[in-house]
Amino acid sequence: MAESPEIPSPTTSYSDPIYDRLEIVAQRILRRIGLIIAALVVIVIVAVFSHQAMKNNPTAASANQFLTALSSKQDAEQNRNPAERTGLIDTAQKALIAVANDETVTPYYRARAQLEIVQIALDRSQLSDASAAVAKAKEWSGKSDNADLDLAVGLSEAAVALQKGDFAPAEQLYASVERAAGANFPDRQMAGVLGVAKAMELQGRIDDAIAKLETLINRSDSNATMLVNLAKNEYWTLKRRKATPAPETPSTGATPNAAPVIPGATVAPISAQVAPPVVATPVTPVVTPAPPVNPEGAK
Picture 1 (spheres, one colour):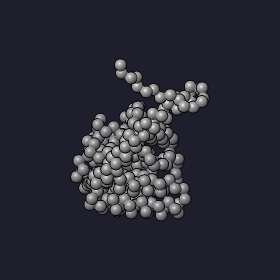
Picture 2 (spheres, one colour):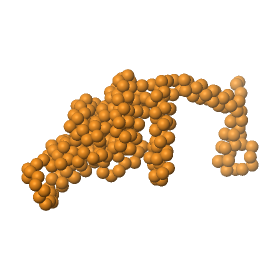
Picture 3 (cartoon, one colour):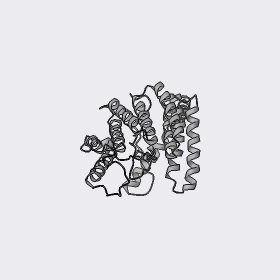
Picture 4 (cartoon, one colour):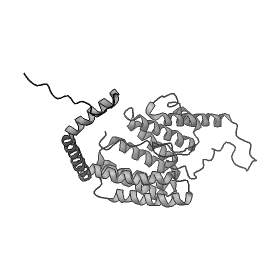
């Protein structure tokens, strides 16, 4: 007759069943302590080899470099001390430039680094630097085969044109992004519409801008709530502006029916837009926001 297996029994003098169960569990763990230690050793070894493999993977290594530089930029933008923030952004800009110029970094992350450099340059009204960074971003984006990244580059290119005061070319660039995004990239498509409307407004075509924004204000895209809210804000701002009579000004001899003067002064930079997640923004943006880029490899 086979012997019944040994059943652990509590060794304490307590009569409480909870203590009895804890004692039984402790005895079982002690009997299997060797197996548990061996399992922990295997887990540590696998983790070490996985970490090493990720470091040697070009995409993972590139992502790590870019995210480290991006994190330093975000930390700098959140700093409330203006003097400190300037220095921290300078440091972040250098880190992003290093990523963009590193030949071991994949084209996707080199392009994304250039887009962040564009935003810093626009913040500082360094328009020539912004244009140069956009050109490099377009070059690397073309080698990354990522449709969403191409659209993000298009939005940045349009933002640079808008801030330069080239409103008509900016309108065309935003419209191009709107068409290319279509239904596949609703956030990019909405950003393109907002950009077109802003360019129209800056050219004095208020009615056209209102009509353009009407295509967005009733949308309920769950992944683009901020863009919808921005469209509503811009729409009603223009409606109030149109409904408010212009104040009378003393005659200066100008032609009565002359077209209104559209200021070509500095337009709010792209970083003054509503953004991800991730960066604080002013309340009244001017340039269309650029939502975050999809991970590398997304079509």
